[in-house]
Each structure stands twice: as structure tokens, then as C-alpha cells.
Image: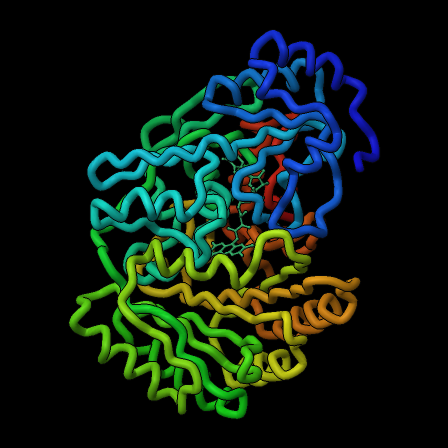
Length: 450
Ligand SMILES: Cc1cc2nc3c(=O)[nH]c(=O)nc-3n(C[C@H](O)[C@H](O)[C@H](O)COP(=O)(O)OP(=O)(O)OC[C@H]3O[C@@H](n4cnc5c(N)ncnc54)[C@H](O)[C@@H]3O)c2cc1C
């Protein structure tokens, strides 16, 4: 339940009723609560008002109404931010889930601010196209892209931010601007990695790439082969084509705990078998389910791996490489891992590493690994799982860069001060310029470069 409804709410509701249809404005607490169902069920807080927006004009109306009174506001897209930054307790929630349209214009997808990864891929599929997306279909496309955007096409097309062509943004003062390389270029720079901290993005235009199928799936090995599999992974990716992405991790399957690889080959389909054979040769696979799939189907198939409405605690560490010592820590963490938890590693390579660090706000352009530490529990207090997340981040932290990927950081995480490296000062200045009152709160931002 809401702890404190903002005193200006009545005025905001009055202003909203002057500008929007009644059905768009939800104030009844049980209905608001029912609509605020997020990926992470542990998120607390209840907005006083939820506004179902249908387009940019609605978003603009809400921003102007809350701005007139100083009521806090938040934005709900795909609802996957594990910290729950989409929910503002006692304030106004701008619900973008009714804005999921995707328009295909040649090699460009025009994506409404509330669309999911699956919405984008499903729209692109009939044209034989694919976008730079993540690994799970139900994640919000805007939240993912603005926070960096790691995915399995990273080696050939780069990060999500590298594929963003423009964004339509409602700013804190209610103005609507288009940010691209020619218009509001500084805002465009900040959006590409600085997250949803600069305004409400009502449409993104992203590049599409001709890609009808990928060869992908899971090849998993028994835990006792983990050391040789991970050392072999290191050798394999050192000479692999950019078109081969091999994520890896550890999880518990019905057959026991495994070190898994999740290879994706996005090159010539004829060569897919040979590429997968190289991954199989890392050990003696106990699970092997690779095949040719549309990327849309591949990401959709992972939605249930991390179901909506579970209890989660996430963290991550960014490693400059997979040293023998890092492998030891990874294996120790995997061995201690509770059965419902998981380790999942993105590998940034190829195209993503050929972009200069100052080109976008997202600064990590050397080859690196992002280890996602996923604590999950269907019920109970999660004490064991949370303790494992903390122990693991500590262990892996000894091999990590000082900052890391802000998109998985919780508010108050001290690492955010280092998360933007060389881009920190520029990002901090742009936040002050575009959102001087701090109206928008998304992933954490540094406050200063000191
Ligand atoms: C299961 C799972 C898998 C994931 N896989 C990947 C992956 O493969 N690659 C990757 O890079 N990341 C991945 N992530 C991280 C994900 O990108 C972030 O959690 C992201 O913030 C989720 O966006 P969302 O819209 O779903 O969430 P929300 O909680 O709705 O939004 C996240 C933040 O962005 C704001 N926001 C959302 N949409 C807009 C908008 N249009 N305008 C302004 N603000 C907005 C919200 O207010 C909130 O602060 C994953 C997360 C989960 C939980």
C-alpha cells in the first residue's frame, strides 16, 4: 500500500480530467495495485494515480499536469527493472503498456515507448528482419535499449544503443523533441546508455538487419567439466567470427546443476552446424537443443525461464576477461548456487567493441563480460538466495572493473560513480540541463565525476 499520497494529487487528478478521458485515469487503490504487477513481485509501493496513455499527447498532458504541482512521476514500460523504478509510491504512474505499436519502414522499426522485445521482433519477422534486442521477449524495448542493450547479435550489430537512430521524447517541461544525430544531438548521446533519465521516450527508431533465422539453443555440460569448458570457451571466442556469440552460465536443470552455453550463430546458416560443433567440443554435452529458429521465437522461448511475478534479487559484475582466477570464482559461485538461482554471462565483442567509448553515453567498449547474478525464489523470504547474490557479487567483484552496467544497479549502489567512466561529466551536465528538477528517475546515474 502507498505510504504517503502526495498532497498535490487532487490538483493533478483535476488537471488530468480536463485533458484526458475518464477511463484513462485510474485512482481506485485496488485497481491501481492490480495494474502495477511487475516482473519482480518484491517491489513495494503504490502510485496514487495510474494513467493509461495512448500516445504522445497523453504523455505530454500528464507531464504538464504533474509538473504544474510538483507531484512525483514514474513510467511503466515492460516492467522488468528488478528494482521497481517504474513504480512511484504516492505519485503518478504513466503506463505505456497501451503504446506497443511497431511500424516497419524499410530497414527501420518505429517502436512505441511501451513495446516489448517480442513486439519488435514479431513485427520485423515478416520482412526477414531482426533488431538488436536482448535474450528475453517480454522485456521492454525502450528500457533495454536506453540502458545499453546486450543481446546475441552484439558481435555483428553492436549494442542496442548502437542501433538507435532517433527517439521522440517528452521532456520534463512538457515539450516534445526528436533526438537524433542532427537534432538535440547531446540528448541523443545521453539517451544511449544514460537510460530513461532524461524524458519519456514515446517512440524509438531502430535499425533492422536482414536475418531470417539464427542457429541457437543451449548446449550444457555437467558441473565437473566446468573448468575445462570455460577455458575452452576462452580459446574458442578468441578466434571466433563476430557472427558467433556464446553466452554462458550456470543453472540447475532436472538433470542436475550444469554449466551451460547459449550459442547463437547469425552468419551463413549453412555454417551453423560446424559452429555448434565447435561449442559441443568444449566438453561432453548432457543437454543439446540447438536448432534453426527465427530470433523472435528464440527470445520468446526464454520468457518462462524467468517468469513474470516471481521474487528476484539481481546484481551483476563486469569483467575485463575470463582469467583462470575468475573461472575459479565463477565455479565456486555456481557450486554454492541455490537451485532456483542462475548465473548468466553476456560477452561483449566484435561490433560493440569497435565503437569509440565517447560515441554514446554507454562507455564499455573494450571486450568484456557482464555476469548477471540472478537470485530467484518462488516463495519464502529469499534469505538464502539473497545471501548467495551478495557472496557472489563480492567474489566476482575481485575480478571486475570498478563500475559496471548501471541498468542492473539498485539505487544507492556506490559503483554507479564509476559506471560511466570517461563520459561521467558530460552525462551529469546533460541531466542537469534536460531534467534540472530531477523529474525522471530510472537507472542510477552518477552525481559527479569526483
Ligand atoms: C528477465 C530479464 C532479462 C533481461 N535481459 C536483458 C538482456 O538480454 N539485455 C539487456 O540489455 N538487458 C536485459 N535485461 C535488463 C533490462 O534491459 C532492464 O531491466 C530494463 O530496464 C527493463 O525495461 P522494462 O521496460 O522491461 O522495465 P520497466 O521497469 O518498465 O522500465 C525500466 C525503467 O525504464 C523506464 N522506462 C521504461 N520505458 C520507458 C520509456 N519509454 N520512456 C521513459 N522511461 C521508460 C521506467 O520508468 C523504469 O525506470 C533483462 C532484465 C530481465 C528482468
